[in-house]
Length: 500
Image (cartoon, rainbow, N blue to C red):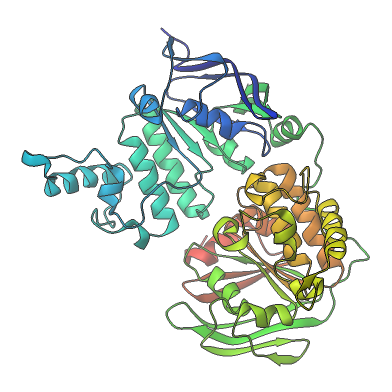
């Protein structure tokens, strides 16, 4: 009997000027969940793209059930039993759930006319795998929540009857409850003999769902281990090559929280959130927790003027503000770091330099002319301060890793010297080393008196970084917890309305 359903031996992959993978070995057993971890740039995505048939290895071999295989395309990989669910969803928004799951494989009859009822029935059978009966197979994907789009993406991959299913950051848009549902389904599919390669920056997930783990660093294989034999410190130490103590940091004794600087009173937006009241003090970090759809992001965007509020009042330093647009918020020194850096936060096809100054051009212009020397000094300073790894400030942001893109976004908004900073999912898709650096930057800004609001679906993050936690449910604030009162059970109980 073969010990491994999938093996890679000595995989090498070069791109112009960089070796992305160097002699990487990977061994996956049948019916196991095998985690793959490493910092951004460690080679995880390149290895998955190679296994998925997108890239061809320059050296090394891939074996499935002991047989050496070559992939010319993603279709080849699918036909050999490998399906991949990438972090960036590949669904077509204006097609239905059924059309997305069975794209180019719809049942057809005479004259190649699609058999609609058979397609619907096959889709219902797929949805039953996840015990889902509330999604209409003919519903357009764009009308689904991000969490349900993630489910459709996974079902699409499963529809190929894979032997190995690769999940790349599958929980990045899911709440704790949705993650639990996903894990239940992974366990169910594992019992059917499907093997998983599971990639996640959330290390606590590795210990909950994975049987074994392989660690990559700088494109190289570092080690593998059975999860039961290791702890989180082992993972972090081998991922980053150094010790990281106290990931979230802590408030220093001389960093006192000041007086109330920011207040929100009875703000509402029709069908979205209602009578929201809270305040934040100078130097305080307030976390917002809740399920997807609770209204947290919408409140943040409302304060920032991206989706203006219908009613209510916002005060800064005791003065009533009128915020009808983001430019109004910026004038009042209110920053908002969006949860979607790729489509709403950054100009991906522009340079780091252009992104850093994009929201504060008045600081760098004289009439119609840009003060290049001032721009260069400022941007180089921010690159150094935020630890952005790049050969040049002129490098396009699209060429940076996720962690470095997030640091550029932070630099953009720190650059207006905010009195209030709202960060929405500040470490989504970011590796453990970059997370630690981002938390340190947030704490440093708070220490200078900025009021910081952290909106996050990552409950350990909210608990770790916040001085106080506000919980939302269905557009309402349903509770507020001090750092001492807050734990996972209390927050989940408030967010779901279910007693502990």
